[in-house]
Amino acid sequence: MRYQETFQLLTFYKFVDIPEPEALRLVDEQWQFAHDIGIKGRVYIGTEGISATVTGNEWQLWSYRRYLDSVTYFRDIPDIDSKASRVASHEFEKMIVKYRDEIVTVGEKVTAEAVKEFRKELSPEAFKKILDGGKADEYLILDMRNDYEYRLGHFKGAIPAGTVNFREVPKLLERYREEAKDKKIIWYCTGGIRCEKAAVIMNQAGIGEVYAIEGGVVKYTNTYNDGNWLGNLYTFDGRVSTRIGDDATHVTIGKCLYTGNPTDHCENCRYSVCNARLIADHKEYVRHGGFCSLECFENAQRDGLVKNADWDGFNYKYAVREAKRVGGSIERDIMRGVRDNIVSQFGKAQFSHRLSQKEATIVMD
Image (cartoon, rainbow, N blue to C red):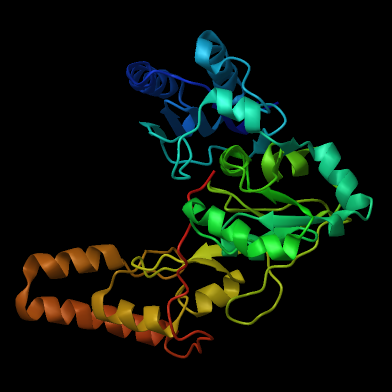
C-alpha cells in the first residue's frame, strides 16, 4: 500500500508587542527554520505580532507548531486549529518571511493592550444565531474584502463595504451611520485579522460600535456547513477559489465576466500589466485568450506582455525578450508574429467590457 502524504494549510495571527530588534531577529530565525523543514507560504512579523499562511505535510507542520510554541511571543496563537484546512499539496511556490511595521496594513499600529481592551468580536456561534434567528435585520453586516471577493461569495444579508483602503474606514462608517441608525455594525474579512484590528481602532476612537467575526470567514465555514455562506471563498494561495459547503448547501453566486452565467471559477487577466482578478467560466476564459477586456486584448497585441498558458502554446515571455535583445527590423518581425498569433487565436471573441477590469485592491489577510 502506497503512503499518501497529507497536507494542511494554516492561517493564523497573533497581536503581541515585540521590540523591533527582536522582531527582526525572529524574521531571520523563522525563515531559516521554515526553509530547513520545507514548509511554504507567507509570514509577516513586526512589532504588532505575527500573521501567517503556510502549507506543509503532517510532519512539517508538527515541527513548525513546536517551533512556534518554543518562542514566548508566539505561544497560544488563537484559532490556529479551527482555521486549518486540508489541502492536496503545497499551495505556495516558496517560503517568504518578512518584517512588516504593521502585520496587516490598516494605516495605524495597535498594541496588544489596545486589542485586549477594545476588541469586540462575535463568535461563529453568536453570528450563526443572528443569521438563523431572523435577527440579521437588526445589524448592518459589511463585507470588508475586495469587490471581486464579495462577488465570488459572501454571507447572507451582507453588503459590500465599497472600500479598498482601511484608511477610508472612518468615512465609510459615517456613510453607513445613517443607514445603520441604531443598528450595530458587524464586519468581516477572510481570516479575521484586518477586521479585528480595524474594529479595535474604531472602537478605541469612539467612532462607532463595531463587531468583527472571530476568526473571519475561514473559522465560520470550517465550523458550520449551514448554507449561510453563499458561493465560493477567494483565498490568497494556490487554491484561489475554494468551494464552501457540499451538494446540499453550496450555491453558486459568481457570474461569468464574459457571459453572465453562474460560475465559481476565478482567473487573472493574462495581460500582465492588468492582472485583474476575474470570475469567469474557464472555457470562456480560454476563448477570450484570458483577457478581461478589449483594452487588454489590444494592448497585448502591441507589447506582448502576456502570461504564458499551456492552452495557448505561444511563448510570449521568450518572444518579447528576444525582440528587445535583437532590436531593429527583427524586433518588428517578432512583435508582428506576437500580434498575429493573438489575433488568429482570439480575434473572433467578443468582449463584454471595453476597459480593463482591474480594481484597486485592499491588503490581504
